[in-house]
Length: 344
Image (tube, rainbow, N blue to C red):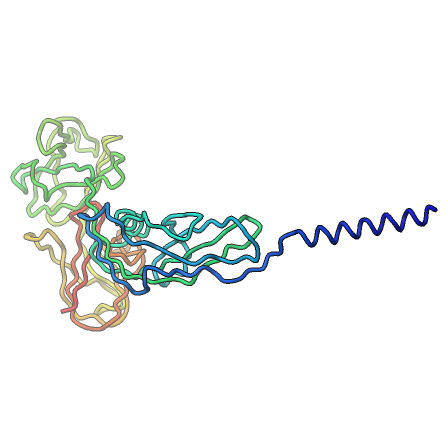
């Protein structure tokens, strides 16, 4: 009798196991989502005047899993060639369309998120990431590449003026200012002292708030004594209004690199264009790389980490893809330093 009861129990368990297997959903990944609009290789030129307009309506086909599932679709973008190593999210939905992506949204992702330069066309790739839960691998659509030209966003960085004898003691002069890129009370900039001179620091383009250095010791005092510049030429100025300290150091800029006439051995000196407030040089370059550095030394040098025309101290080498005669400008009259390369 016990034998028959045991066999009956085994049969019941086997029946229930088969029944559960029949009712459990089977994961069978089918078609991946496909972006159907916008069309690949469409070119967009963004403008601030249309910041609130819809950039484009994105549509795609459904991902197939072999059973009904609640799918979240995320639209992602990255710069072409980056293989979505650091994708940015454009929007997400459980549907098959996103029709609320504004021009401002895309522009902000490209300028702030990807550090692209305004006014330059960039190849941007989009894809759909389809996900149902953490246990199931994300399914990605094929990428769609678009050409997008973002617009430059004007940011009003905090400024500190540098009036002095070299510019007529004019605190309202907008060409002789330092910027605080992070808005943290720390200012930096480059000033051309055309002649040996005295200067001070001032705020709000007037004399009501100003600082000098009574002890000539690198510390600032309100309404303090004039500061004596260490010499003529371009100087790098750093001011920390939190600690009321400052530094002034000569910065004679040059171009160096494998693309220049003397390679990495020596700098090609740049000259100051007073009219356009920039450093410039015209020379023949070969295929290779360049960087900017000051005082023929590596202590202060700048390159371009993101290849976006913005410079960083110690940044990556800048590629020169074609030999020829070039004019290269170094632009230090702004919060985020940049450069321009023009093939003549």
